[in-house]
View 1 (cartoon, rainbow, N blue to C red):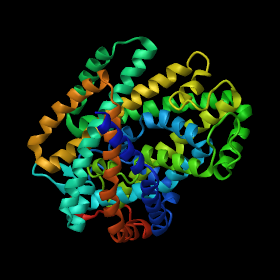
View 2: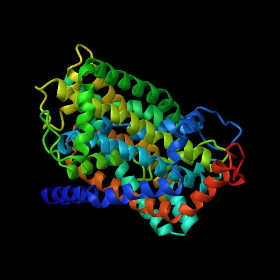
View 3: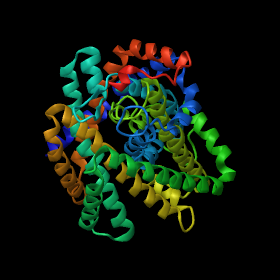
Length: 454
């Protein structure tokens, strides 16, 4: 077991190091330039996400698809992960994380477009799509589609299930002395009540849970920033200077080199918003939309909210708190965010606990759909019931056992998901540009695409 643990730990560190950073960040930049900076359309995209399109074909609304995707991406990585990036890379990691989110909007747009462009309808009228269908139908690479789905299934049980269940159980145990097995049972019941209703049930719950949890957490961040008001200027200056200067960290931070700030900031941003990993397009394909570009725009807002807003706020809270309170040890990676929220009198720790629980639970729901569609592609509809049963069992197991090995395995699978997906994005970039020109650049977003109607 030690050999397996060390193997996946080293492999995960390698994959989430410079090779993945260069591949993903390079794709972000390439698609940003080729699509004429789709980030400039973010306000239009946000507006579209609230528009109902009931006359279009699809299983859930555009808003429902977006909330399900955000449920999977806005997780404990936004809370604990940003603290890890700041601790290991210095305050400059916050800026690199934010830039990754801004540029990642283009890749998330591209994934969403391909998901709708190559989706297909089942015999019972359900929509199926995602990188596997873009690889099969767009590039004729069914073998690579199978590999992508296999990685997705493995990743879903780990990073989308077990580690999230464990985070909830640890939170309730440390703060309120709730036994892990009790939390596991409660989680199982709640998950069963949602996922056995299928994508509409998941989207309905996420549509209510995600806005609540995001607003709740953002209010907590703003309250801390108000408390740290006199230190915000120093925090912002520190973030910008240390992102480009190896001697600018200070204020109790360790690390501080430009390379470390870039590596950990970019890696955390990529891991958090999942732009390029190929997960979010799976639910984007189920959206009611009249053409691929409309859903692409809506999908791109997920990266905006996840990284440009939530991760940036978390980073600013952490850096300003370290500057304001010298007793916070910036070297403690796992406790940095908790230490910052604990400085908010009376309610700080409660707000953070609610954030961890709701973020982790919503991730379990979102990833259950991703894994389900991947297993359906591999084995057909008959495999879904077995997948769901296994899913709820893993929810309980995750709450009660040590998951270090699972973390590293699922981290590895998650990284490997990105490679087939990015192949589809890059090789089909011409299709993405063509669709964008037809509907977005020519102001035809309201036109119906017969291919979307299937």
